[in-house]
Image (cartoon, rainbow, N blue to C red; front, top):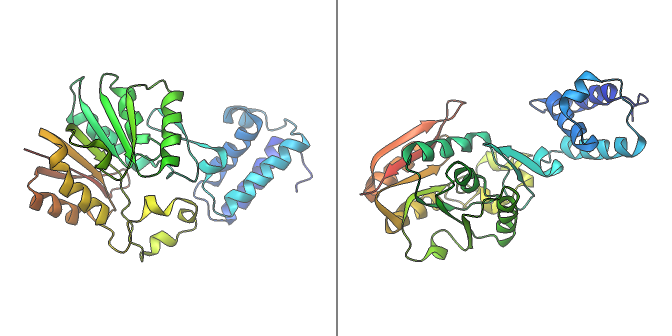
Amino acid sequence: MTANLTTGALLTEATARLQAAGAEMPGLEAELLLAHVLGSRRSRLKSHPEDAVDEAARGKFFEMLGRRVSGEPLAYIVGSRDFWTLRLAVSPAVLVPRPETELLVERALTLRPEPVARVLDLGTGSGAIALSLASERPKWAVTATDISAEALAIARSNAASHSLSHVQFLCGSWFEPVGAQRFNLIVSNPPYIGAAEPELAALELAHEPRLALSPGADALASLRIIVRGAPAHLEHGGWLLLEHGSGQAADVARELVVRGFRHVRSHRDLAGHERMTEAQWG
């Protein structure tokens, strides 16, 4: 452990260790960890590198740093992740919300500009998509389902934290909990990594819930279930929006066309990958 007890010295050491571990933004992650431990702003760490850090805080910081170096997602370590305009609590019971999923939120808001709508989020996890939509459209009636009761507990807590009382959470597999209800929008970020794909073996993904990452040997299994079941739950003119793997756009579009959807379009995320596909029913 460093002999220098200032925030600047701790950040320098942590950045070096994270860089050696392969972190993409080691300096930022070091700042986020130390700011979390100290209950401080990152700007304070930068403007006052000479600030002393007591022994208890140093111990907690290095314990968290060790977890991050071993591959545990930063969001699980600090217990939250920013998504859209919300700070969401997360745990290993849910996927860490990722920036590329914000594309799905953006498209949903664009396709349904009306102030009133019935919206279904399948496999909500932390509630990231459902709560982002609810925060932007306070008159929308949003329903969110998940097969994991533990995930739904986190989503409900996030809803309460942001006073989003117009979101209903239901436990069950895909459309099962909603009966014969119909919606203007159905959105989902389902599991889409095949069990044998190398991506699933990535160190960071090893900490996330396998059920939310992979549907098994067939990477498209969950996407097919949603595509085939969605028409029974969409109003005429309603939209289905699906996140999928960067190489799956053509296959997802084909499934949608075969099922009878129209206006099938894929969209690229900020990295240039075809990340989500939308289609209209009726």
